[in-house]
Length: 343
Ligand code: KG4
Ligand code: ZN
Image 1 (cartoon, helix red, strand yellow):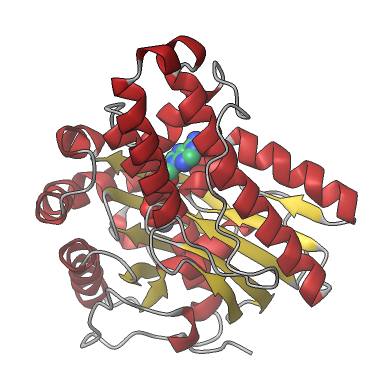
Image 2: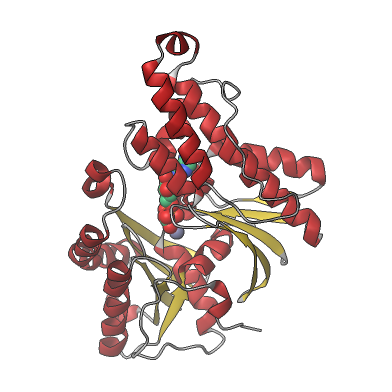
């Protein structure tokens, strides 16, 4: 069974061909970084126009790389939310047109379910249940994952997402976009303990996050830094960057471990674009080890937005008989609890 997975939820036009629900035959991602770079963040209007330009060539390339033709497709899985309205519309309506013209079933996928299940694209996925920490530019959430289609939100950010904090701090320091990879690279030359930026734990038992305070703290510190020559002699810009990264990682790691301990689930899966961060990956593995918690993470290509995770989540729904109605609309806000349970 060949499933075409499509994701146009934010600024990447992605499509993939998945065979029999596990083998990725192709996974093509057209990044829009160059388009949004001058603005230091994603410009929704530009993103949707770029998706319109790129969706056909990206699907064509995915089919070509997989060595199949459009007529070989058995089903199409497409993200219907959460995400940017205009971007989601491009993928969903392309999927509808394909499903109608080829007379193949379509299933709509919640983008977060894609991230939660992305670990199944790897050779040795964990057993259920597990805790999923999904950290990206749009989301920072902790889920309890009982089975395919069975999720419970344990905590989420009350303001900015962790990736958004990376992007905003990079913008205010004039580093470029997207901020995450740049901050990770520059942090290697900085002292992570140089500045104690605030860690918002929101109470010792809370699994919610807040990252807007740290962004403000970095902004205030940087303002003072630029005006203070003596401070500049003792603190490098890389020290500020590394200290910021350390504070974000501290919170993400501690909350994930807390989620594992409080639910007595000893498996954590890391997902989403921020999960590419090797410091976060290493710290979570180390802290997990100390608590007897095993940590799994997809390879970086499946951490950032991709069509393969959408095809995989879609496959699980298709084999259970789920089908999308062609009148279905996008859902820019699409809480995981709205998703139909599969078992
Ligand atoms: O999952 P993703 O590709 O798209 C969204 O759904 O948002 O995640 C993109 C986010 C951006 O905010 C980017 O700065 C962040 O992931 N990111 C990173 C790293 N690579 C990407 N954050 C920290 N460290 C990284 N190495
Ligand atoms: Zn994402």
